[in-house]
Length: 433
Image 1: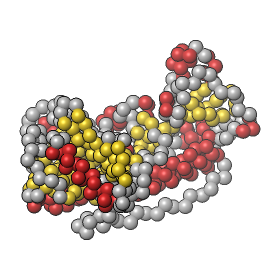
Image 2: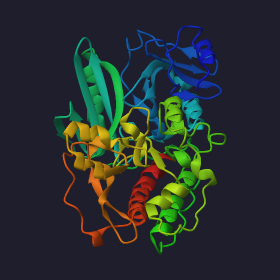
Image 3: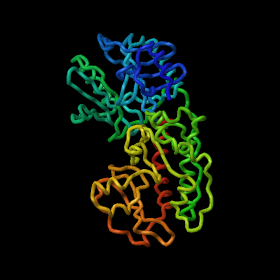
Image 4: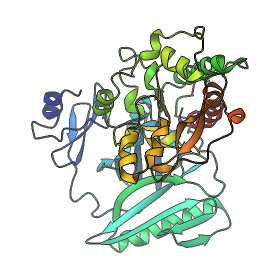
């Protein structure tokens, strides 16, 4: 839990909003003032924002944009002659816009690079993510613009296609300036999935070189459903270790050694730790073993590992089937949550009036998003494995029972799913580091 007294002291003693800071280091804290306004305390100086920050600005000459995609943070700099605008905050969330002397820009960029921010292009963070800038003119006029490939989109509908990406960027900057002259000011910055081909941003010479990432080890092909469980867990442990930001597996967390890890993928750190207290770190002492007599691979998983709570930050979730753990904000943005305590089927039975639904046991989260899975206890294989079916809260009755010989053991289902998800997540995570 944050030190609220410390945060209030950094806020010049003024009331704060009791929410985890967006960024919290020894000499850099992005905290919330009472009411939700973002303030930035940096190297002993508190920036509260200036209501006149957008007045009398020269045109944008060039832009610099840094990202911490795992935690959806950004630093956006617009060089406008002798003065520059700096926008710091959460993508599609709270931010603070400040003015600085342009002579200080390089030092500011260097500072945030040392804090883990990576250089992106001003109009796209990666090949897959393009930047949407939204502008506001009170009381209710909005305008937005993005560049995707050689195309400029305004207000999500007006499309202008240019001869090159460079021409598209120039067109977007021209339109931004025209809107600024009409009284529009920057209101929000967010990322959206690209539809067209975009170049990979190249870091400038001043940016530190990235260390090469360890290669993925080879994992054995499992010989049975029990070994499949062990290999799937090993794959998740490996990814957790090799990519130390932007995602995590709660069961593999070492809170003493990874104190800041949760914040790289989940904003509501305190709530998350309370909600998942029993799961955090439970794999640290777990070791593969031999199945007991007549034990199913599901029972083996529960006995040895207990649960899976894989949280993936918003910058690394492209092409993954994401949902909120527990169907609640702060529970974690996840593509894989497995346990035996996820869902109370009694509520759905009562809502539908169909007691046949009691035969279903949900073991994978997703609830109303068509991303849940359940065991159908009506169908059991000769080795004690239960049939696995998709589940959704809109279900009114169980599906037709599966043929017994078609039942796939839980361990094999888990191994296949983890293999697919890890491949996609690793590709995304490589773009974050």
